[in-house]
Image 1 (cartoon, helix red, strand yellow):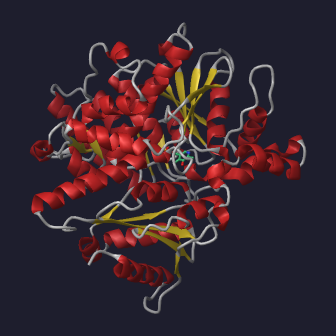
Image 2 (cartoon, helix red, strand yellow):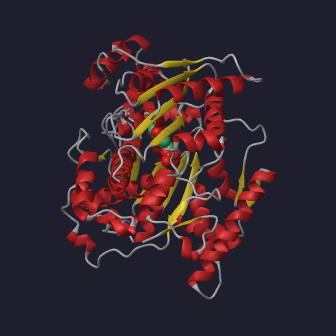
Length: 526
Ligand SMILES: *Cc1c(COP(=O)(O)O)cnc(C)c1O
């Protein structure tokens, strides 16, 4: 199995799994995808029925990762160990347990990892993969630290804490996470800055999240700085993140079959709170691999570029060019980076070229064209056949802030259909979408829960406060909801460096960039 760029790769220059993971983004700006969709073993539904999550992960990942180092893969015994280690940090033995909420609603809880958000599922493994590949390269060269990376990322909360939890104390990796000072939730700020491992560096930037992103972009575009420090990104475009997330769709399938043997699993819809389209794209790969399901449902907040795409076939940035700040900040995006991977498949599958090789080439050319139009005109359009393909596999719904609050309250109240179940605002977006989609005819749905409610306590408490009052809602929350791991978190020792404008530089951004560079220079590999 090799990997190609969504914007085209010469067929003799495909990458190995190792290269795709270490590079993240292709030099032509594209995202890496596998050269083909592998085949599941014939009797996988029986063979895999009783596997644990790590065992299931091993089976699925093995389809995408060759079993020898020479092919840029990982020998099976090493892969098993990496996977075991990655999921031993989860608090649930099932890793991603499936909870029945009502007759037709099942919640796949993805937040049992170290930072209580679904990103842990991918980033715990990614950290171990980075460490494994770097160590292997250093051993081959017989030089310590010859191969190392400096991970730099901007965060408004979730990605940063999960990345830090995944990379803390890893050999040959330094990690620098920039967050806008005073603008991330107190819990998320504490989750990041109380990690005191030597290779972890939190930078609190005197500016907004966009400033943080601009600084990171400036560093990556600085050829000399980049070459000196071997900058690496951990954002959701990394193929390793997608492939590791395929596993929980299969885990949900088997859990559902055990809980509800009479259910027709080909009728089940998976509803996913969506921002950068990584989580749901993993579901799309699961479907292409052959996992029985009805369709995948994209649930967006008021940043609804994806919902508008499924309505019209047009992928269009909003005029104002600003993200809406919503109650589900991890889904506040202008465009969805992983959507490019779906576009590639729409182009590929709608091509009438005679050979597979031609289809692949055409798809690459088409994606380049679309991305260029999106950049220059702010929008791009697929044709009717391609839109039909997208609608065959997906539906999409947009959920407003007030609907999000109403959904949190509705599930918190017990009623004849369900017991009291507290959900975070991201998960609430998906529950609301699921309700709307099956309003007229009921069918089973698996709703993916992407964060523990305690991570977004302000929005949750204020949404349920109308039940009694803010004070008793907060007391209930502290007593019943707050996990013991978060006890005393806010008072723990912290380490954080402040990025204020430096002395040199013409603009504020330049000054911030220069100050960030100083910090990285001082804390990097010799
Ligand atoms: C990142 C995140 C999402 C969005 O996932 P994508 O893969 O970017 O679509 C949803 N909810 C939470 C809590 C997240 O952290």
